[in-house]
Length: 511
Image (cartoon, rainbow, N blue to C red; front, side, top):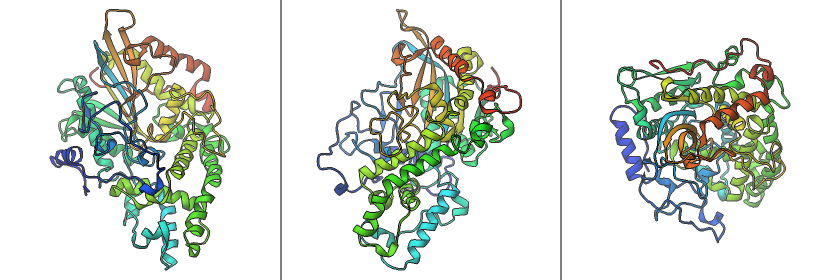
């Protein structure tokens, strides 16, 4: 097991990168074999390689994506944590290679990224600590699958320092993840780096974990001395109401979304609570009554949910967690669905304000894609998961004609399209590549936009006729314009005061 205390600086970063990607001995975070159905097998992927170097797109992927035999795992708990786990590469059956299509080159790229791996938020962490204190104060040994707790300690001893912040230990350290993402982007888009003497702006919403993510990412792209040598600059965008439409965090400026306690921001939390009460009682009964832990008394829905949360958070800090082994794959799929419901109704297709909020960044990005590399080649923005979901909603990247806009809250919709785990994990990112292609026919000759979600190419529904399932640029920008006409302006939908300027800060100096 590799652990990495402290911050990643200097050449130590290179040592860590090599250690993680070339000599990783991290134990996979998987429930015990007894929790898996007997017929569960690992199937060979269509990308046969047991090397951490992935030639298909000319960069690295995490070695935990494959088993020791080089086969891709069919069930992996990291794919069911609903955004509470470390970054994972998104993989879908029969997905195309994300290497460049023939006779195409990337001439501009835009990224909207969630902050890297973090400790729990203060609210979630305080719930965890309250549960830990309650169980420790019983002063009786716990039995069955909870017996590990008798010798277990919480994963931070300084919660007032760590809650809400990036992690800096273990193989999934947020500091390491952000730096590694930077090296990935330098590998893939190094030809777009500006000439010496031209500074690249990076944008981050005003949260310490978001800002730190942007800085570690900058070190990966531009080098450890990026600030000293003035190769890049992180511009912090306030997360305040007075930003109006000029914001990276529209949930903080959409007045109606904030004030509507029924169908606004709180809608996701309310629908989550309904489903928690549907799936958690059976788990609580198993842990207390079936495993002879009557001394614990009643386990509330929030307490069991907190146990499931701690699996992901402890894994991020320590590399693995005994809480992950407490639940069966079916129970993890219920947790995953609970997290999907939270985001679906808070900032996804189930929220009536989401599309208007997501349009702000998407419209500004569409204008830059249309303007082309003459206005800049690299545009990187860092935010929270709650700011990415609305953009995905207005883009309609994951439409679900069967359920939208009402995912059920009484049971798991196993055939749903909306799944957060592989789209918005910590460090999750959506990239838009402007491709210039010079094929010999009308289909492959021109300018296109291709969407990359966590290193997986995702075709835009209804617009994937270009090379590598890309969307012709004219159709892409027309799609955004249509959405704007259908939805109305952000200020109109949200009743936001101030001028409706849209986002004005996405500008690169020197272009």
